[in-house]
Length: 139
Image (cartoon, rainbow, N blue to C red):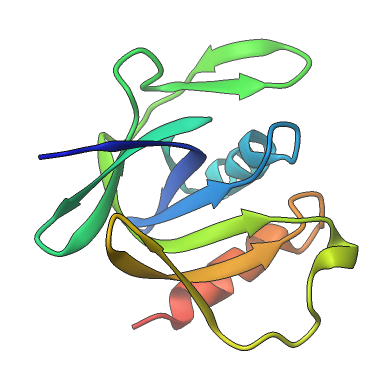
């Protein structure tokens, strides 16, 4: 099975994978940590391998970083992790001022699979709530 390496973090909420993308320093790890603190499971931090299995996009952490996450200002720490998750939502990070207030529903295509997409400001207090609400609204 072919895999693609992507610069992203991934967590699983109730078993559903949330892939968090954004440039370095945008808050991928911090947002993942806040989701983990609220009950999500770590899949991978900073880089994930993507593959397709049974028509679903699947994220895994590379063997060198599995179970590790960056705590900015402290370093790398080990956490319990999930070996893989089917990606149900892609979260792209952007500054609040760049996010359209009432956008149309959005998707993105990764490895030939179309996945719902949400744009959030990782530093927004409501970022984790937005992700949880959108994820729970998906069929």
